[in-house]
Amino acid sequence: MKKRLKWNTKCKLCLVPSLLGTAVFFVVPFLRVLYYSLIDNQFRRNFVWFGNYIETLQNKYFLLALKNSLLIILIAVPILVVLALAISLGFSYGIKWVRKTRFAFVLPMVIPTASIVLIWRSVFTDSSTALPIYLLFIWKNIGICVVLLTAAFTSIEKSVFEAARLDGANSFILHTKITIPMIAPTVFFTVLLSIVNSFKIFKESYLFYGTNYPPDHSYTLQYYMNNNFLKLDYQSLATSAVLTSILVFVIVMAGIFIQRRFDR
Amino acid sequence: MRKINAIVFTVLALIFVLPVAATAVFSFRANGEFSLQGYADLLFDCFVFYPMFWNSVLYAAVITLVQLLVIIPCAFGFSQARFKGRGALFVFYIVLMMMPLQVTILPNYVGLRDMGLIDHPLGIILPMIFSPFGVVVMHQYMKNIDNSVIEALRLETNSIFRVMITGVIPQIRVCIFAVVLFVFADCWNMVEQPMLFLKDDGLKTLSVFITNAQEYTGEVLFPAAVIFLVPVLILYLFFNENLEKGLTLGELS
Image 1 (cartoon, rainbow over the protein chains, first blue to last red):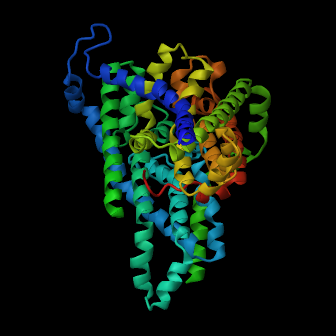
Image 2 (cartoon, rainbow over the protein chains, first blue to last red; image 1 turned 45 degrees about the vertical axis):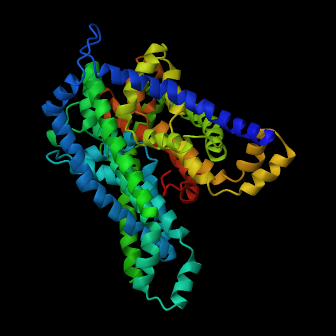
Image 3 (cartoon, helix red, strand yellow; image 1 turned 120 degrees about the horizontal axis):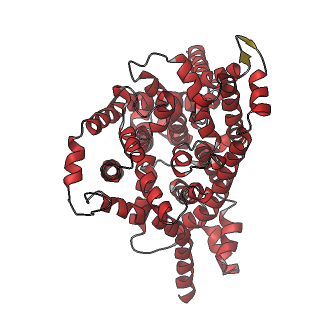
């Protein structure tokens, strides 16, 4: 019993370096950011409570940025996930030649954005729509989606299929009763990850336009924050960082909640 | 049907490789014809290029290696330790992993400023070491490892390090390779942190060099972009087969 206890303590100690680092660089500073979002400015430090939040939620640029961020989620994310699903289906059930093309779809994931925007800029000279950004988002993110989905497809044991087929199941039943339920959690996770990654498109967009003030259609939440960063406007920055983190927190928690319901 | 499939995939694959291939082709052109002038200008005349290249290598290598030392024990601890709130703590790591950089960069900045690490290489390195991605991925992977090996080793030794090195690491090799590729590529791709945390040009990275495009002539840009993607490309060639097996992220928590 004593030894068991000791082992458990040792295992807990293994967590310490990571927890300590996370606390020092993320959690404690985040609490200070939370504090900044509740005061009027760095010098007077009067509590204004939700004053900054009300101001931010009425700010025209914040709303524009929010709208554009949601548009990417509604337009680019579904296209990305459906395309990734089709490609991973091909990898899992297709012929050998198809599987060899995997290299091309996963590669963009590791290619640094700074290298690739040069070509993007020389091809997409027309900046009247957000199309180049959507394409860049899909190009960059298809790899991780394909990897996750292919892993899910190949983890379905062939023997389950064989058994079901012997029991007289046709291919429609095979897929609706086996394939879809088995890959559903991963598809769900892929959608979640892509939504979250769409918030991260700032780097691509920033490098593509090479400016802090892109055309209106591409002005996303991250621009709003970045511009406040450069202005050293801590209150707006802190407020929008807190708002964005709440948004991401809600999306992720909803995801975990739905997935747990699914499992039951 | 099979033929159509093969053709569709080949065409799609070509479209996806095209941007990389075009970057490579453009790097060998000047004034509309084949030329190595860009490379020559970059390698012999552009002296800011070298320190920035080595900074990129240094930051990415140090972050990747030290991060492994932090996340392997942490993931092992998560999968072995039993305590109240473990599930909630892991959900916290997942949420943190999902946070966009623009949310975490301000807390990072505030923390680094208080420690006097702005304009210091450690300001770039330290926060990245504690990025939660690797912990989440490795913990998910460790759910499926063979626990009997660990149990057997524990009868022999009381050292948790020996258990980890001889019992766990060989089993999670694939996952480690996948994480190394992912983390290295992520560090290599950093743009915001060097721009916001560093003022001294001598500390900045190659991504900043390429980003400040306007300052240099067009000839050196494409060669710089190509040289910039070669290190990750090599790593990708070595490790990409491990990705599907190493990143098992379907189930949350």
